[in-house]
Image (cartoon, rainbow, N blue to C red):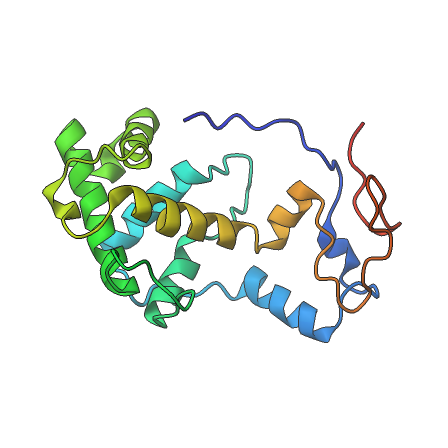
Length: 203
């Protein structure tokens, strides 16, 4: 896995500069304020599980350039505390909480099998190697019994982390997203066209 970031596509863009503009209404501002300033505390994960998941998220979505990283682990913990999933699960997967608890333990056991150390004590390259094993369906830990390691990696770890990351306005700046279409809306929807209040991509 490599994590070299390209130059920013939308240099200088800050979606939060629209805070008091017609782009955002009070409902939008309330939601964004929660994402920015109301990061939930640990309530469901154990301290060790939290540290492990934090280390995994740091490899899936590294943020070395941020002085204020986008929080991912706290929102996963909140989801698990509330037992709030997508409303469905794959038939070969345990219920949400059971899948996360078993899966995190199995990731750590996979690290011990490969490197004789827990995941959090591995260097970045070794952590990536563990995650690559999961992504390629080559997991060997017996703790995966009844839980598909590749599916857990893709549908729980990666999709959940990416979804939370790109729900945050700091990430919107990276992709030039102008925020919710309500109340202002988007008018110029044709190919290679943009509204005046949208981000301008670097040439």
